[in-house]
Amino acid sequence: MASPQPRIGVVTYPGSQDDRDALWALAALDADAVSVWHEERELPSLDAVVLPGGFSYGDYLRCGAIARFSPATAAVCAFAESGGLVLGICNGFQILCEAGLLPGSLLRNESLRFVCRDVPLRVERSDTPFTTRCEPGQTLVIPVKHGDGRYVPPPDLDPGQVVFRYRDNPNGSVDDIAGVCNEVGNVLGLMPHPEHAVDPLLGSADGGLILASLVEAARDRALAVA
Amino acid sequence: MRATVLVRPKQGILDPQGAAVERALEHLGFAVSQARVGKVVDLEVAGDDETMARAEVEKMCEQLLANPLIESFEIELHG
Image (tube, rainbow over all chains, first blue to last red; front, side):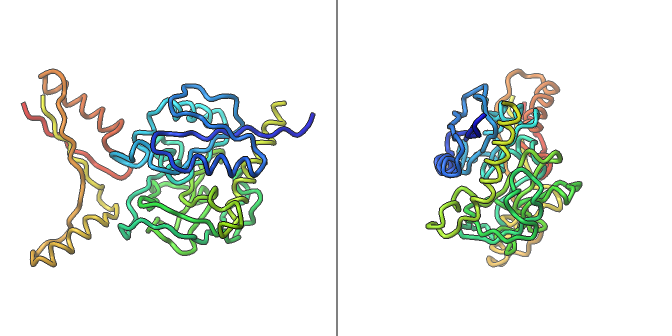
């Protein structure tokens, strides 16, 4: 059987901003990227899901607090609980935390300022489906753009769940944590935007390593099912 | 029945807004410390049974209004 293009869904909530960039980046990395509307109660047949950045539902009350209850989020939770690959970027990370798929919470930046710049990250683990193209200890340069990115872990967070750390903490995150996965390792959230760092023309292609890892893992799953 | 929900950052959670407010108050000459900034949600709950209303608002807090990891809540009911 020919190597299929893995099908990766990107959920669009009211207020999502980076859904199109995520669709573009995944397609550039040879995935069949499909848009999923937030009102969908069931996901189409997918090999992975991306929750994009933005300000879903205006970020009212707390970032991600309302998006957590949208029909598509319930479908994504069921997908994740059955072992599906889920990547949350920025607002997507906040939604996954609010939904309880990832531990912790994201609060207002310590500086109280919106930060928008390239930041160096250290890869802590290369054995997740999202980081197989990376080396442990490798530095990736990927942009952040957020006002609420200060990660506060639960007191009992297993340090082994930390996948990325800031080398130059832009928001006051506890222990410089930039990205965490769930215990099983099929759900990852991070504040930096890999989808904005795929084409070297935009300053860095390091985000492509994360998304290409995801595309590869999704392809392996598609092949395993086929 | 009218309810007021006070949502506060939990003790030990860094509150940079509270710190900024505290510095501004100090700048105005007030002797203050430990300022914390939370939120208030005012709402009208159906029915006039206080026990039931309180139970209902508690459920709202647990499911949506507060994030138990970082926030505590307090409910006030006004007949």
